[in-house]
Length: 429
Ligand SMILES: [Zn+2]
Image 1 (cartoon, helix red, strand yellow):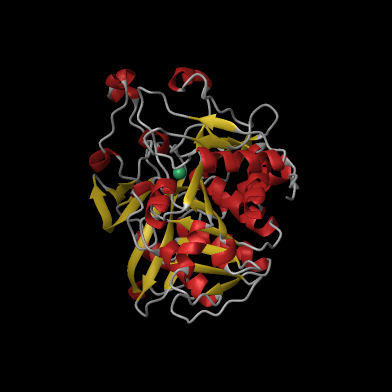
Image 2 (cartoon, rainbow, N blue to C red; image 1 turned 45 degrees about the vertical axis):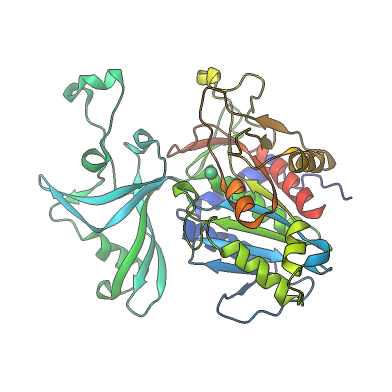
């Protein structure tokens, strides 16, 4: 049993997380940033269309439809004999998706037609410096990633003088009132501007996956600068920790694997989402590509495996402390959070939760617990979905965060090396 001490200081890890988030305005950019970091340390790409042949120690990654990735280090023992240690995260966050016919004209303004994506806190997007990012589909089939520079888009608030009822609570109609302003009637076309930035011909753009994104970089905050205010920390915080952990883990007899799925915020139902076949397909091919010929090998491998489903957790908000179950109150900077739910909104049970607790203890990492109040509904994660689909023993965990699904969420840099150490310990044991 190896003991893994945090190798990064909170300051270093926090700066690295901020750089990771800034490089990842969309799931496509997040996967590109994760694979860039993996490739820099010896991982190379596998294509789903190719025939795979893998050897012990091989470090590879597979991308499905740009927004989901599986990366792995093949164990020295056959998968059926040693199983795998997996970490699961998601790459998407609540936002607004640009509509196909996006050019909205109102009262001398050019606006951008958008549709809400996921359970966003709409009011947190008002009066922020916004832009558009995503990918363009070209006539030849190529997909090009793009970010519009600067902060050209805005969702302005209405003056209080024009609607005094906001004192009783702001209600926003997404169809009429959450339409970002792009310019006056004479402004350039949005897609033409994006094509110019991407270096492609506007006429060649035949489709797009574009979302609104906060253009301001992640920031240090708090009296001692140890907190991080940034967009998309749910779940880029765990994507970042998991990438560092996979890179840090020593090779082992078992296979070490990271899966980051798109579409968690909208129910995971897609080819690349956690309800889809991506992880199951990669695991089956991993068994076959490392010489597993017995039809029972895949099932033996899964039965020997464990998945850490890592998604950010609700830390105590000092102004709303009563929203937490009073004996289960995770705090910012208190370390990884083990999530449990009697109704299986989280997959954690005694075996998997105990295993994670022991791995944290091995690494000298403190552990917090989260359950929801009995009178409040509980969120969920890719954990129960993946456990259901694959039959894999799963534990739900996360780093503490305040303001989940806000345009700007809040975490502590102190938690970053603690989660990296806990995940590294899980991948090593
Ligand atoms: Zn999440």
